[in-house]
Amino acid sequence: MALRPADQIVHKAAWLYYSHGLRQDEVAQKLGISRATVAMYLKRARETGIVSISTSTQIFSEDALARQLEDVLGLDSVWIVPTSGDALDTAVETPALAANVFLGLAGKGDRIGVAWGKTVYQIADVMSFADLQGVTVVQMCGNLGAPYSYRPDQCTTEIARRLNAKGINLYAPLVLSSERLADELRQEPVVRDQLADISGCNLALFSVGGIDDDSHIVECGALARNELRALRARGAAGVIAGQLIDGAGGLLDCSYNRRLISADLDSIRAIPRRLMVVQQDNKLGPLMAALEGRFATHLVVTASLARSLLAKKGVAQAA
Picture 1 (tube, rainbow, N blue to C red):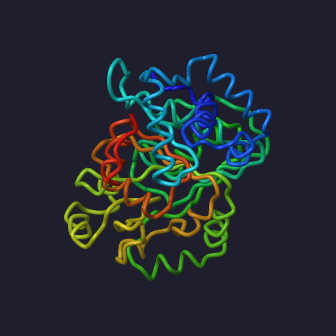
Picture 2: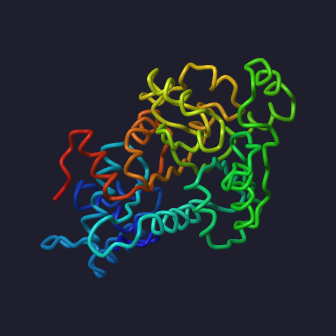
């Protein structure tokens, strides 16, 4: 099994110290902790066997993979869900791990932006209850009229409930019937101010959607299959907060995106801590596009996706 989220920083300190050769004060500066805390973490790593110079356990191997991905992708933190050996079902393990990671990142007074989708709702559904004072949870994109089981408002409301936080839903449709209507609605003061406030969040939780025929933007009725196929042929590579992105992580120039009510991509990237969670192997392409667009600072992925990312980058996995 993988390390618990609480032990990730211990392993990261050990990785920087032993594998990168940083001094303890340099590790402290990189992690934003004191030198004394680094020394305590290194001692714990040795005593608990997290660090082993002569042996390579599954725990060390998978967490070393996480540290390697951090180095290659320039991310603040990566967490790996095992996909081999005696690992449990990743569809169960991924939301559970992501929920713990999210709670570790959230703090009192935070303003948290939340997107939508099956993965986000699964995270909300298994999240432990926490009484975080002064927290506000903000919906990052418009809503769906259809009876959809993991609508944006449901994701926001459930996470706010789990955190005993204030929830702010965006009471506007995700997609309008015309570009003119969408532009006019975005100029309405309530909608305009709420979208503008998203860049003021200090934590975001989201996934990246796929662009296959069973994509959630098809299942929810935002796009027809033939429309998505045409946009895929024009370069659509993934979905962020309902919006289609290209392979470089930029907003795809298309009528569909211009008809959306959602936080613009720069507003999302302005959020300092952005936790992205991806669990399906068939989302490698969308994941790479999202990473190219610098949407994530923190990442939860399966081991198989992590290895595929390294392979795509032409990097051999560390032994």
